[in-house]
Image (cartoon, rainbow, N blue to C red; front, side):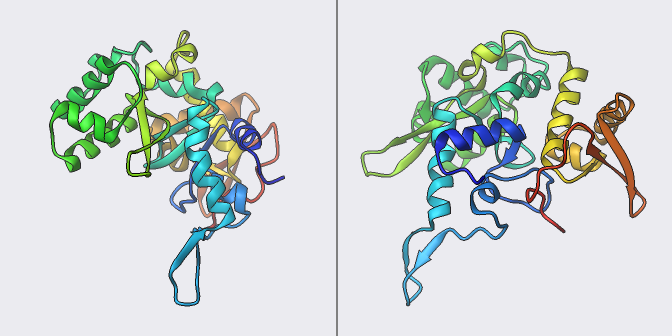
Length: 269
């Protein structure tokens, strides 16, 4: 059943575990767009006879709204946390994802991360502010160029220092994404972090649940791991009877052994 309510969207994220917001042929992860629309091409606009924008398509209206409502309600973790694009992580998998950082899971643990000068300044500003903030607020706090701060925020999301926390309406009526410290936003989930090896295995299982099949390179790209570490996790799952290998064009790919692959969630090509 395609999600049509926020609760159904949250349930879908919980089921697949790891997902992209929009489909991307470079990654095996399913996307919320595909779950809602049932097709790969992203059709975002309804236009009039002269090609002028009229409104979002009904499917885009849902996805666009849920990308903020899911993290606002902590129904999913949202940000640039997987692959290299906007993604969603089920709350149950947040501890495993964060364990990959090697950090403690406290709001100020970014001091142990490899951050550039502006990245550190933005993280410090978010910590001192004590609440979710827009990009504009963070930019004003650090007093730097918009382009540079946007780049720093994106890097902090990839390093799991910042996460999306919903959206707010600006004085001009526009919606603006809120960002919070990842470890503050998801503090309740980070009290006990698994060892890295177990975390990688858990996340790899989730990749297999959402894909028709996946190679070590696919898993490495989705989770931003080294291919050797992804291959080791897949081989461990195979040894435990939780993943089944086969050759595809001379490349070993695995499928989940415990459940059939999610239908219609993998892009071809």
